[in-house]
Image 1 (cartoon, rainbow, N blue to C red):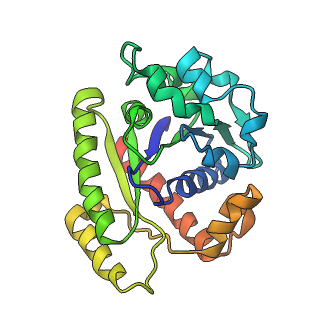
Image 2 (cartoon, helix red, strand yellow):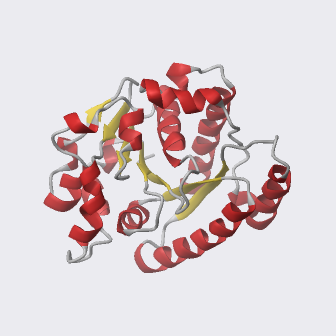
Image 3 (cartoon, one colour):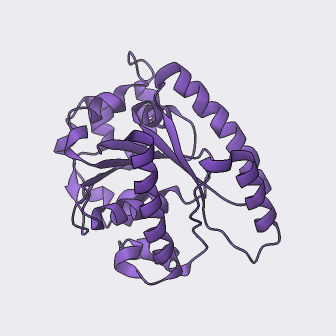
Amino acid sequence: MNKVLSFVNQKGGTGKTTATINVGAGLALKGYKVLVIDIEPQSNATLSLAIEPSEIKKSMYDVLIDNVHISDIIVPTSTENLSLAPAKIDLSNSSVNLADVSHNQMVLKEAISPIKNDYDFILVDCPPSLDLLSVNALAASDGIIIPVLCDYLSLEGLKQLIDSINRIKEKFNPDLRILGILPNMVDYRRNLTNDSLSLIRKNFKDKVLKTEVRVCVSLAEAPSYGKTIFSYAPASTGGEAYKKLVKEVIKRSKKLWH
């Protein structure tokens, strides 16, 4: 399929990293060859896949700033078919260092280009902002998955995010598609959840994924063991949700691009 999908939301705490690594692992377990690219300076995807950033010699910073070939930094993970292009804290300086680079919105796309056909899916974990790193991810992507919380502020932020995505699409990547909006960390114990979710589905219709990922202790615990939900607690509520989500991502990808 050879598609690049970015997990993006300018709001923090929406579960982008959890979604990225578990969708990646689920696709890999179905036999797809998957690369996760971590461009988040806190390196959460890297840590969640049991790679210690301090032990990495080269990272995505070197790819973006020093033109290191991305294949030189890719490392395997404990999940077969799932690889990682890791991040370190030095990525926090990348926007400043890219500021004077010509066509600085396209650096990631150019870096991915030589290896894109080596993978069925390349998943990009973005920072919780629409900075230059996220713009690079959107310029390089075929599709976007937007994890969103079910509350009023998230709904308002989602409207702003989609406006920003449309501007980036117009300027840098006319073929960019929203693969889906993911209701994430859904908690039906909260009074506003049903109303917020109904509003999200009413406003964004078929852009909203059918799968909901509910609040799950195992999803929160798994990264501390360097595991995905499929190796930590596959039978948990979170594990079952991600099995469904992976199927839906595959189905939507085939519908969008075939």
